[in-house]
Amino acid sequence: MHKLFLVEDEALIRSGLKHLIEEVIGGFQVVGEAENGRLALEALKSVKPDVLITDIRMNEMNGLEMIRRVRDQYPDLYILILSGYADFEYAKQAIKYGISDYLLKPVDRTELAQALGDYRRKHGTRSGLADQPEEGGTDLKGRQLIRKVKELVTQRLDQEISLQYMAEQVHLNHQYLSVLFKSETGQNFTDYVSECRMNRAKQLLKETNLKIYEVAKLSGYLSSKHFMAVFKDYTGSTPTQYREQL
Image (tube, rainbow, N blue to C red; front, top):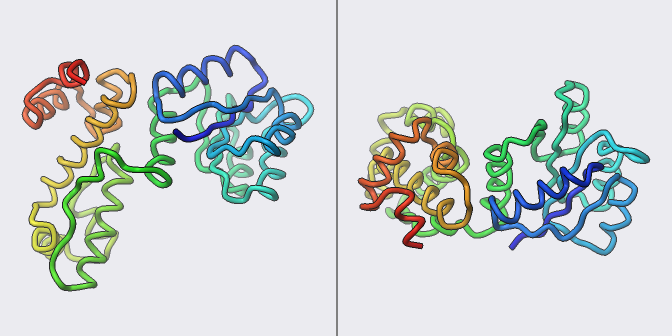
């Protein structure tokens, strides 16, 4: 369970975020809250969260000033901004302070789940993805390339993934990458991606209360109907049945 700290000046929004993070998305515990940056800095001295979520415009000390000070003391803290302002200057300043994501209010829970999921994949166990096939073969360079491709697949499961795109990322001809991937893993690239998507979907169905269309989106399927058909072919049950069986 990862620890999370909320900084938001409206109590009702804090309460809603806490419920969303703990009860719907899951995997995180809200260990502290503050209504402005000054109070947050005081609380952070005793509470050591893994993730900090903050608004920007608040009384006494705004979010950007707080982040600037936080970075001096906790340079590696994972920080997400939730703001009602899509102002370029705010975003530019936030990027300068090394935030991990900038999400707009009202909060899209799918986007928030994705942002927190990124943290878990980088800093926690990968659960359903842990049983992915290991690469074989004896060519060290080939193994390193395939490991890089696998990491990119994991990072982009909620997006379109093509062999051509992956080949460009590792500077290989896509046909050569296809052969190399099969040689090293024993799987076709497309089959591997489908397996990873299904593992992601099973993980989300198990660990969250996200709706089926949200699970589909985070697993890389724009059509929930297509997702449900693929999931049933893969597991023998619909996503709803799978969740109920758990």
